[in-house]
Image (cartoon, rainbow, N blue to C red):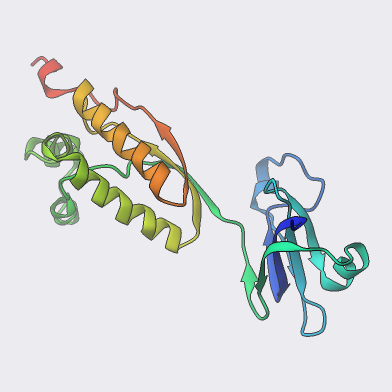
Length: 205
């Protein structure tokens, strides 16, 4: 049995969130990143434990001093490449039907959000189409959006419901998110947002 889960070897550059030992940062410190540069003779290695913990990040010369005869499940040759942290997308609404791209032209022409709303657009347009959509149709759209996110570096995503505004559709959306969490290799945090907006039938004029 191997000792470690993953070894990324000989990267040209590794971008880390913070220096080793920094637990929490705030204010202007959040704008800083720590970059470790390698060279042709001494690249940067990353070692991941079986539990997924980062055990080591640093130059190969230091790595070879510390680790002897280790075994890993997967080894990746990152020669000439830059390794960056995965993106955590903490606010998304990726389950919906009813494309509203036509509203963009209205806004370019000077329409306000309320103008779009009065013309039948806005969130209620999405709500109506999402209510009418099947679970399979919603899943197909969600899957493609998640795959697009993954292709650009997102590893963890928060997925909200909120385009149902009633029990059945909100439940349908949450089922779709749950299915995606089981079938797509991305970490998903699911959020029920039943009170995303006031449903039309509860608005008095």
